[in-house]
Length: 93
Image 1: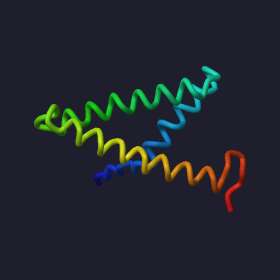
Image 2 (image 1 turned 90 degrees about the vertical axis):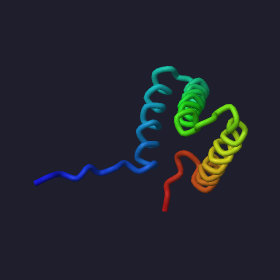
Image 3 (image 1 turned 120 degrees about the vertical axis):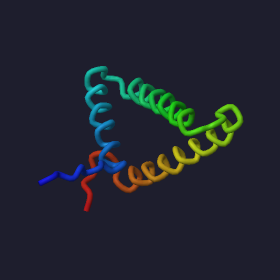
């Protein structure tokens, strides 16, 4: 009997990155440093993603910047709203 590979959701993948960030935050005792490291890592990986997906990255660079910036802004807004509704340490319903 074959086992089907279960794909991870974007939220499960994000949770793995967050777990590592939490571990590094405790180790470094500097959440700002870890946040900056995550943003830099995301920008490097997204630039690589754009390069792999593009047939002419130089010509598509501005579109890639606009698309990735909008994606990040939308995700950040969603998560900021979540922290406004449920500040850290506040129990959820």
